[in-house]
Image (cartoon, rainbow, N blue to C red; front, side, top):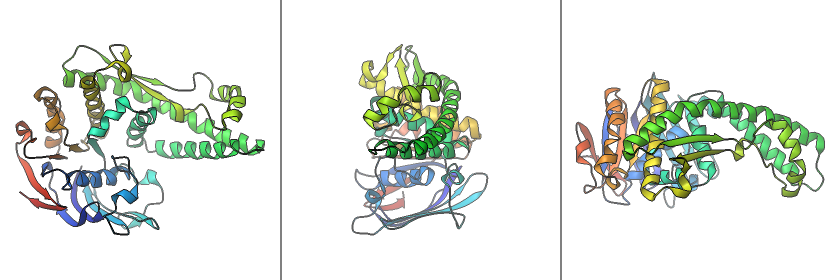
Length: 358
């Protein structure tokens, strides 16, 4: 899988960009605040329709403009043309000149995994980020997962809206409860099946990154312990007090343990960084195993922050991407460029929203 052509209009600090990218390793060199990360953000947007920086569409529009436009030609089993337009008043997404009606029909056309400083929040941050880690893996490997997740989210929102009312429509509440239970059970089943498949990959990746004998364990902790319907009924009085749905997959946790202890509470900063890298390596390796080809790898200024041992943990994945004619996009400054990775790469200079071959 790789990105053949990228076109940007009024995206971040890019007034206009048209660039062709062959398969292989692309090194994006430049000083800070020139637009290197913005390029990775645009590619990640094509894959997930979100920014990995956790911002909304308005923050990705070039200053003083009304909206942004991102277009690409990508190649996997076939070539596809993608167009994304966003403004406060209008949002358009098309695939091969046809409007996309359902996200499930689009996700998976581009698969990308990003390595960035924000990844540390997978270990230190709130449970929602770890749920999203599971959901992204499942959405890119099971076509039915995203529609079920969306159905569940709609039911929870509608149910919470009813619980906030002074007089609750019991019949409507029961209907949304039934919908939530049905979709929620499927989500929990998917997550339970996923964890044994990725836990071993994560343990191996951490051992490579940290060169440590301390085992990394991933444990799925659903907020529903037994029967979803029974536990909801038991919580009905508390729900009326808090005016919110208190249990379900939207409250699940992915527990990360290092040597049996909570990584968030007891791991050092260095160990947390190694765990975060291991989780993203796991994501890339799992998608590669399922689909047979590596995703596009987006590596944002993290290599320069790592010692040679941790950088070496990336080499098998990078080599696999090279051999499969996939792509790697890595940003760094000239000073932080890990030169041991610099074989057969394409060098680009990024200066003030301009990209040119070096």
